[in-house]
Length: 151
Image (cartoon, rainbow, N blue to C red; front, side, top):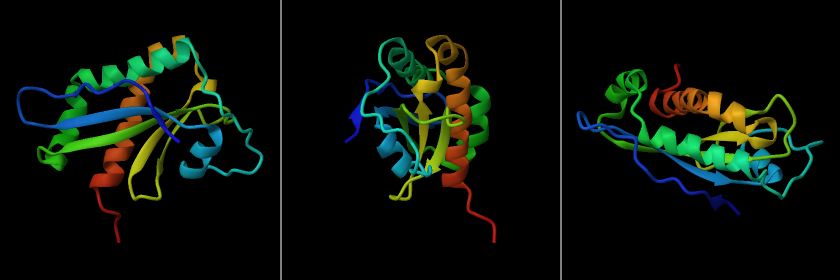
Protein backbone atom coordinates (compact mmCIF):
# COMPACT_ATOMS: atom_id res chain seq x y z
CA UNK A 1 0.00 0.00 0.00
CA UNK A 2 1.35 3.45 -0.90
CA UNK A 3 1.85 6.10 1.73
CA UNK A 4 1.61 9.69 0.56
CA UNK A 5 4.32 12.07 1.68
CA UNK A 6 3.55 15.73 2.18
CA UNK A 7 3.49 17.70 -1.06
CA UNK A 8 0.59 19.53 -2.62
CA UNK A 9 1.75 22.99 -3.71
CA UNK A 10 0.99 23.72 -7.37
CA UNK A 11 3.65 24.74 -9.86
CA UNK A 12 1.84 27.53 -11.63
CA UNK A 13 2.50 30.98 -13.02
CA UNK A 14 0.12 33.88 -13.41
CA UNK A 15 0.24 33.96 -17.23
CA UNK A 16 -1.19 31.04 -19.30
CA UNK A 17 -2.58 28.36 -17.03
CA UNK A 18 -0.42 25.27 -16.92
CA UNK A 19 -0.17 23.11 -13.86
CA UNK A 20 2.13 20.12 -13.53
CA UNK A 21 1.85 18.73 -10.02
CA UNK A 22 3.93 15.93 -8.53
CA UNK A 23 2.59 13.74 -5.75
CA UNK A 24 5.24 12.07 -3.58
CA UNK A 25 4.63 8.65 -2.12
CA UNK A 26 6.55 5.56 -1.00
CA UNK A 27 6.44 1.91 -2.08
CA UNK A 28 8.52 -1.02 -0.91
CA UNK A 29 11.11 -2.37 -3.36
CA UNK A 30 8.90 -5.34 -4.21
CA UNK A 31 5.89 -3.13 -4.98
CA UNK A 32 8.02 -0.62 -6.91
CA UNK A 33 9.66 -3.36 -9.00
CA UNK A 34 6.26 -4.88 -9.73
CA UNK A 35 4.62 -1.68 -11.00
CA UNK A 36 7.85 0.03 -12.15
CA UNK A 37 8.73 -2.42 -14.88
CA UNK A 38 11.83 -3.90 -13.23
CA UNK A 39 12.73 -7.57 -13.20
CA UNK A 40 11.65 -8.87 -9.79
CA UNK A 41 13.82 -11.97 -9.56
CA UNK A 42 16.90 -11.44 -7.44
CA UNK A 43 15.82 -8.08 -6.04
CA UNK A 44 16.14 -7.67 -2.30
CA UNK A 45 12.82 -6.97 -0.62
CA UNK A 46 12.72 -3.90 1.57
CA UNK A 47 9.61 -3.02 3.51
CA UNK A 48 11.40 -0.14 5.19
CA UNK A 49 11.66 3.29 3.68
CA UNK A 50 15.11 4.84 3.73
CA UNK A 51 14.52 7.37 6.44
CA UNK A 52 15.80 10.57 7.88
CA UNK A 53 17.59 13.13 5.78
CA UNK A 54 17.09 11.36 2.43
CA UNK A 55 13.33 11.17 2.87
CA UNK A 56 13.14 14.79 4.01
CA UNK A 57 15.29 15.95 1.08
CA UNK A 58 13.18 13.90 -1.37
CA UNK A 59 10.07 15.68 -0.10
CA UNK A 60 11.84 19.05 -0.48
CA UNK A 61 12.76 18.22 -4.09
CA UNK A 62 9.15 17.38 -4.95
CA UNK A 63 7.86 20.47 -3.14
CA UNK A 64 10.41 22.64 -4.96
CA UNK A 65 9.29 21.20 -8.31
CA UNK A 66 5.70 22.03 -7.41
CA UNK A 67 6.44 25.58 -6.27
CA UNK A 68 9.09 26.84 -8.70
CA UNK A 69 8.44 27.99 -12.23
CA UNK A 70 10.93 26.71 -14.84
CA UNK A 71 10.54 28.72 -18.03
CA UNK A 72 12.18 26.21 -20.38
CA UNK A 73 10.07 23.33 -19.04
CA UNK A 74 6.81 25.24 -19.42
CA UNK A 75 7.66 26.80 -22.78
CA UNK A 76 8.11 23.31 -24.22
CA UNK A 77 5.06 21.66 -22.65
CA UNK A 78 2.51 24.46 -22.30
CA UNK A 79 1.32 24.24 -25.94
CA UNK A 80 0.78 20.49 -25.53
CA UNK A 81 -1.12 20.76 -22.25
CA UNK A 82 -3.50 23.50 -23.44
CA UNK A 83 -4.05 24.81 -19.91
CA UNK A 84 -4.85 21.40 -18.38
CA UNK A 85 -3.65 20.23 -15.01
CA UNK A 86 -1.32 17.26 -15.20
CA UNK A 87 -0.50 15.09 -12.16
CA UNK A 88 2.58 12.90 -11.91
CA UNK A 89 3.23 10.23 -9.28
CA UNK A 90 6.74 10.39 -7.83
CA UNK A 91 7.42 7.20 -5.91
CA UNK A 92 10.27 6.86 -3.42
CA UNK A 93 11.50 3.36 -2.81
CA UNK A 94 14.60 1.57 -1.56
CA UNK A 95 16.40 -1.74 -1.79
CA UNK A 96 16.78 -1.85 -5.57
CA UNK A 97 20.35 -2.30 -6.85
CA UNK A 98 22.25 -0.09 -9.27
CA UNK A 99 21.76 1.27 -11.85
CA UNK A 100 18.20 2.07 -10.78
CA UNK A 101 18.65 5.36 -8.89
CA UNK A 102 15.68 6.92 -10.71
CA UNK A 103 13.54 5.89 -13.65
CA UNK A 104 10.22 6.46 -15.37
CA UNK A 105 7.86 3.62 -16.14
CA UNK A 106 4.38 3.04 -17.48
CA UNK A 107 1.90 1.65 -14.97
CA UNK A 108 -0.83 -0.95 -15.46
CA UNK A 109 -3.47 1.80 -15.19
CA UNK A 110 -2.07 3.47 -18.33
CA UNK A 111 -0.35 6.32 -16.46
CA UNK A 112 3.37 6.88 -16.09
CA UNK A 113 5.23 7.34 -12.79
CA UNK A 114 8.67 8.50 -11.68
CA UNK A 115 10.61 6.31 -9.24
CA UNK A 116 13.43 7.45 -6.94
CA UNK A 117 15.45 4.66 -5.28
CA UNK A 118 16.52 6.51 -2.13
CA UNK A 119 19.06 3.83 -1.20
CA UNK A 120 21.26 5.09 -4.05
CA UNK A 121 20.95 8.78 -3.11
CA UNK A 122 22.56 10.80 -0.35
CA UNK A 123 20.90 13.87 1.10
CA UNK A 124 23.63 15.98 -0.54
CA UNK A 125 23.12 14.38 -3.96
CA UNK A 126 19.35 14.90 -3.73
CA UNK A 127 19.90 18.52 -2.73
CA UNK A 128 22.28 19.18 -5.65
CA UNK A 129 20.83 16.98 -8.41
CA UNK A 130 17.34 15.91 -7.37
CA UNK A 131 15.35 18.80 -8.84
CA UNK A 132 17.13 18.63 -12.21
CA UNK A 133 16.56 14.88 -12.37
CA UNK A 134 12.91 15.25 -11.37
CA UNK A 135 12.42 17.79 -14.20
CA UNK A 136 14.19 15.44 -16.60
CA UNK A 137 12.01 12.49 -15.60
CA UNK A 138 8.86 14.67 -15.63
CA UNK A 139 9.71 15.58 -19.23
CA UNK A 140 9.80 11.85 -20.06
CA UNK A 141 6.38 11.42 -18.45
CA UNK A 142 4.87 14.34 -20.35
CA UNK A 143 6.36 13.23 -23.67
CA UNK A 144 5.02 9.72 -23.16
CA UNK A 145 1.57 10.92 -22.13
CA UNK A 146 1.14 13.79 -24.60
CA UNK A 147 2.81 12.68 -27.81
CA UNK A 148 1.39 9.69 -29.64
CA UNK A 149 3.66 6.85 -30.66
CA UNK A 150 4.56 7.08 -34.36
CA UNK A 151 3.21 4.47 -36.72
